[in-house]
Amino acid sequence: MKNKYRLMLLLLTCVCLVLMLNAAASPVIYGVLDRITENGEAVILLEDRKEEWVIEMNELPEASKEGVWFQMIEEKGDYTIVSIDWMKTENVKRETGQLMDRLRAK
Image (cartoon, rainbow, N blue to C red; front, side, top):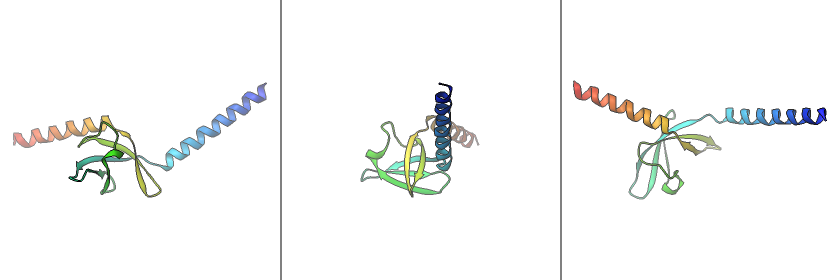
């Protein structure tokens, strides 16, 4: 019985290790929905890559709108939206508002 539990623990440890290594191989990329074009395409600016990524609107998460930030990963040369990053969206919005207030005060 002990051997059975040891084997299960070892298997679980291996699965966790594989998942952690896989996650480490795919760093999170941040992108912001910059605009929607006239022909219904979404333009996402990739923060650290200084690139634009253009996709169809139906590929965006439901709550997407201009100014929303996404957590993304790159897989085989293409990007995948993992989730909307509401915290980053609110932080950037607040910081932008503060900068605008300072500019108006000058």
